[in-house]
Image (cartoon, rainbow, N blue to C red; front, side, top):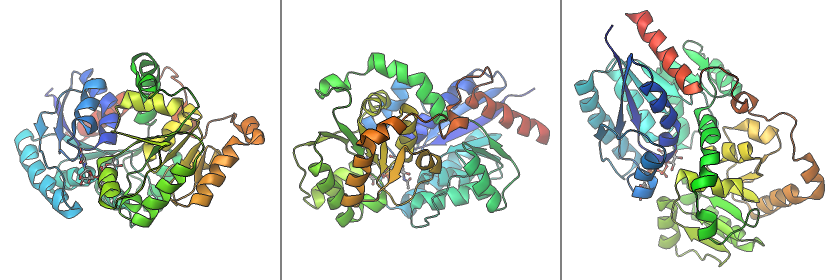
Length: 375
Ligand code: UD1
């Protein structure tokens, strides 16, 4: 039988993390020919290359070098460039990941060219259509043939939209990554020494969502709040956020330690040893939950509702009072007693290896079954 060709489309940091184990699993299937097309949405070395190197991801066969621009412009450029890749490769299936503009462009290119499409991390919803990611998710899920959902909530969200065909709940590949890399991070990362920080002595913060970087009042409020905290705040700053801070000359207090974006293993180390995490990233909410580190989400809503219902995550937006109240709540002695949930909320995702195939292998198996059923 001919090999089944899968083109995997990625472009932004979290997608490299989601793809790493899928690429590894695909390599173990003799029936699969897996190649990577990188849109170039993230292009700085510490936003892209470092992930390929540290996570042993095969080099992309294509790098489209699309770079920065408006959402419409970059998505349009990606679509055109991806059409050329897909014409050349003529794959049996396209894989897209998460909710970025690269996800949307990959999904549209595949569906318009009649190529079956699998969406990894399908069904997540914030129910806030002003987020570019929400639009990307809604459209990608609508046109996907296979939808890999990481949680029951995600399956339920799709059902409410009438999407039931091709839906599979498969353990979260990001959690599989955490299991694999948290010990590796402990051995390889030097970040705590470099920053002269001890475990549980600092807060870890990240801010990159458009709602926080493009609204200067919110960004100012966040930085002011970080500056009022009684401990150092390690703040790996996304390039978008760096630009907004310098363009608006926002004052940053000395306890806020601004550093360049860090590698995946350094980020895991920083997360694991933080006394709390303040973030607007989806992945970091899950990672905080995995490490049992309190998380304050700097948004009004989250796609990872399980982290909130378990008590490990509090939604505080960019409001100084709410953020400080959330941190106080986590540090109260009573709360410390409660900080050992009997059952982790993302229990499906957090279930330890039970002898079943890894989630990434399951995804490949499901994709192969789907393709064989069509031959
Ligand atoms: C994108 C995703 C977001 C994801 C995030 C992870 C969309 C709509 N958003 O947001 O869902 O959580 O990636 O980081 O796709 N820039 C650089 N160097 C880089 C990359 C970006 O300087 O390597 C700058 C550019 O000026 C760019 C800006 O950052 O315009 C924003 O980058 P972009 O990829 O558009 O969105 P992110 O904010 O990274």
